[in-house]
Amino acid sequence: MEFTDFFGYIAALAIGIVMGLVGGGGSILAVPVLVYLLGLNPIISTAYSLFIVGVTALIGALKNIRKGLVDFRTAIVFATPAFITVYITRK
Image (cartoon, rainbow, N blue to C red; front, side, top):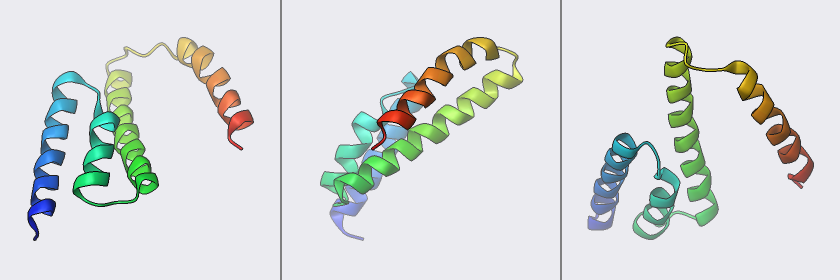
């Protein structure tokens, strides 16, 4: 294992700790680590970062659903225009 790989893994651990403590900031921290420390393509790094944030959000949503803290009507009101806008502007 090279030094840059080791430093990249330590940075990833730090990002995980920050995300766990403050509940966000993963993308803004993860992309530079993936690009500059681990040498990944910026497009691939962005995709990995979005996957990490998506999984984190899904886990948080599932926990809140189990606790009964999710208002599905409000979620639909906000999600519907977001999905439509993404579908229209994705090209």
